[in-house]
Amino acid sequence: MKYDVIIIGAGIAGLYASLHIPKEKNVLILCKDIPWECNTFYAQGGVAAAVDESDIESHIEDTLRAGAGQCKREAVEIMVNESLQVIPDLISRGFSFDTDDSGKLLYTKEAAHSRPRILHAGGDATGRYLHEFLMRANPHPLIYNVRVFDLLRSGDTCYGLRALINNQINELYADNIIIASGGVGSLYAYHTNSRTISSDIHGICLERGIKLDMMEMMQFHPTVFVDNPWARKQLLTEALRGEGAQIVDESGKRFLLDYDERGELAPRDIVSRAIFDYKKRTGSEIYLKMDMFDEEFFAHRFPNIKKAMKAVGFDLPKDLVPISPAFHYAIGGIVSDLDGAVGGLENLYVIGEAASTGVHGANRLASNSLLEGLVFARRAALKIVEKDYKWNHKPPFAEFKGNLVEKDDTILKQRLRRTMWQEVGIVRTRSGLERALDFVDDVQHLTIGRLLALRLKTARMIIESALARKESVGAHYIINE
Image 1 (cartoon, helix red, strand yellow):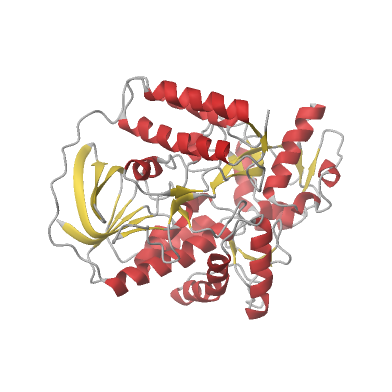
Image 2 (cartoon, helix red, strand yellow; image 1 turned 30 degrees about the vertical axis):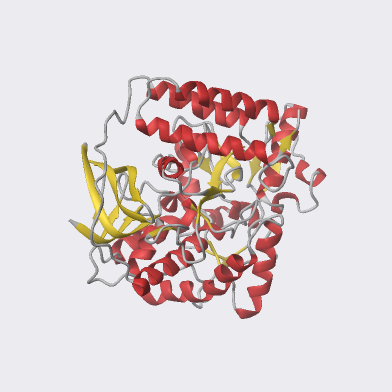
């Protein structure tokens, strides 16, 4: 069976794209796990969007400034200008952002924004609310437990994919394929991502001659509670600091002001490195201080954080919470144009965190990620409908031989995650990156399954990109020792 469109991924980008593909089209959405296991579901802060036309230029400049001179201005302009289209579109379809008593939209401020422009829903549950809304609105079939492990490319056409579906290998074909599979979080020991975000698709793209870019630009969120037993660590949204929460040491000192006059509202890369450096120099534990909040306000504005932290023994907003930076977002990714199209291929598109449009530059501005997913998903879907590309004959593809998983893969995967955290993290050294590269090369020569091999290809690309960029910029901070 051949579909008109296959969408790989069921987060905000994949689901919003599906809304813009007519119901009469034969579309299939592939979900790797259960639907809510995606980064969209866990997004807390909100959606950055220009408040009105007078805010467009300011939002553009804030994004460019955070991107440390590495953004593509045209991409930023498209994202910000079209925020005034996608937000009303969501509202007209029935989605409700948080409002005041008079029904006026509520905006909050986050780091490196010059004014409040972050829309939120359910207090600190924006991603969860958006994901549930888009799942209910989705007009096309969606199947679960699908693990894509190859793209069937020949020449300038991507004919389909290979996937493990309910423990059986299948080949699926489509006239158009949209990659909306997310980033690379599970490559790192400490991360805030869904367990499904493992960089497989990036590795496939490297195999199939599809270009990746800016892969050294890995963003670390500065305020994460990492002392829990799960792979995904507890994010403490930047909106907390936007509303007044403070980062302090054991004596209560707001040491961030020694690093940047913006303190808690400096860009994420600056705050993360400051915490890393201060803790290394002083040995002090670092905390997020929230006791300035009224308890009723906190329970209403941040209900999910309050509930999650109560489950591990914290009474918020009263208690100090020990924090650490953790991997949060892959700024780089699969190269696309401004309609999501992958260069050199007639019918392959990439949107959301998996893509590298140039909109984030070297450091993503807070809460621009959900906006990027919305804007470029819509553009890709409209382009597919307009172009109406179809292929008639497919070439033969060699049968898959090998194992997806080998017996030692779990142990090696954990070693990879520790290596990436230690050597390819917040502060990098050339010697550390070379050690990481040696580790990846050694493991690639062992008997490993295909899924681990794909992760290693992506990890190698991140390391090589970090070695190639010799000067520090944005999220990439390197010491040449």
